[in-house]
Length: 297
Image (cartoon, rainbow, N blue to C red; front, side, top):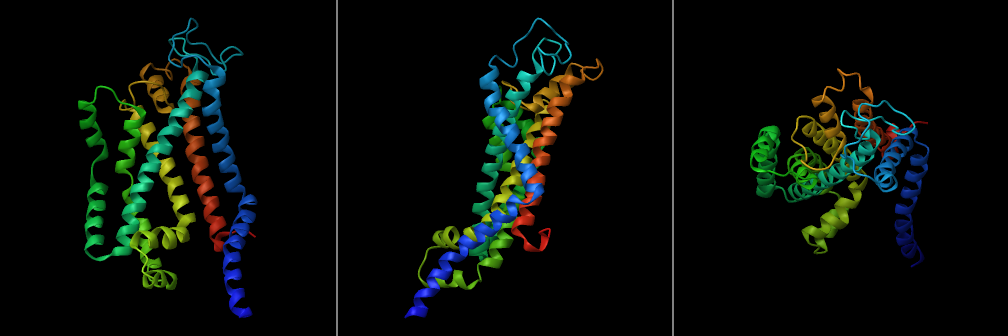
């Protein structure tokens, strides 16, 4: 009886030990710490900056084309708009699109990947066909068509479109991982105990892929920011508000580079690069934390 009672205690302690080990290596991983620090710093700037600074980012000013100074930290545009005010508001919008677009894509990709990988058979074939169809859809062409019928485009609509078109690769990756886990002993035991498909996926398979799912979301997050910035730059972004991509589009439209107004296009470009680059560096760090073979000694 004593030996039987000790087994559950060891099983209960195992996940806690794994978490402590992961936290130990996470705090000592330079890539992860640096990437997350940059992302958190820019996120705080995007969240608190508009509140502390106030004002309207697109409001015209009386000092156009001014270089950076104590009054205007990032200078002004050709219309006298404060570039720093636009930058902090643009950071908030950029993060919002990344979280919403990446979140929608992650949810769809997980649902499709888990169900296809676990059920197999006709269900897998049908979902795989749906994935392939969405994968080959010309995203830009579809957006151009939608743009022709939408007079007003919002950040939410842009994030929704990005999320609905960027999930296929995540679904394929999760499906492959689920295929390898569905034949494990703990899944067979759950199936024999009468657990439903949804319970097995959420209680048995998904927790064993938590680190992989988190890294997938980070990649979708960064990818959504890049897609949104690209759409903004070619003039297919939101018709109201400001984002880092729209700042680049406005700077290009009003010949900031030709006029030597480097302070107009460098901050948004550097902001996009910093956010996306930091996310990918953090993702590499997470891979090293969760994969013992990649850990630095």
